Image 1 (cartoon, rainbow over the protein chains, first blue to last red):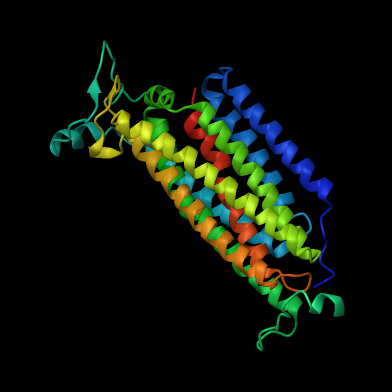
Image 2 (tube, rainbow over the protein chains, first blue to last red):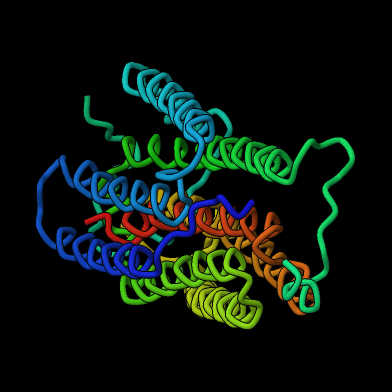
Length: 124
Length: 216
């Protein structure tokens, strides 16, 4: 077991500082409006952070490749899950309004002011 | 090894393994498989989030203003520091430094506790304003579907919070075993495995923070 690579303290400190820096970036970029790209930009920074955690804190950089294969397989199945579900939702007719009426679902929200409810105004 | 003998309890490799190395690799492979499953487990909620954000973008914009960015930011930093101290605890165990292993684990536990205290304060504030999930929702808003966001918020942060609590239990278990002198350069498998789990908890929060607190 002594042959295991012992990561230098400096590497861990740098990793932590990088992650804290990226957290500041996350908060800062949320103040800018990229329109429909807002989510994409936020997720991009989150993915960089996640990669840094996986490579350095979780040690995948120095680990046996097979552990990374498991992680990547998991991510591929997540992508399938996202793509198929969102593809379905995007191309589906508006059914929620009909269902809400059929089952008599009432919103528990106390509507205040001149609120323009968007609940049934999906943009297509 | 001789000078280590006095300070540490020697680990016996289980009979069905050829070597300590094989035993370690097997545990790690199993742990990664579990973590892969955890990602898929959480992804169900993330997909639900994506679906509702796609359907009601303006509601998400309104809802996220009820969350405090400062609290979320503080918790992100606390978790990142705890991930660092966890990595340091594993490293200390690798170099047979019992005292440092114990201290780093303790700091990790304190950070986890801090995270839960901040989370508790946030939850109490939501309860106070009636921002509860689903049909328990009694809050005010301009969107008819505002309660959906809080359903997602409580499921996502609640499941994550349960993971933090389990992690705290595991760290306490590690602290006890460290104190007994069970972890040293030749055997630190449990520290490494709990470490991996802890980093995953951090990883999930890295995505939760921008998705819930920074919608705008």
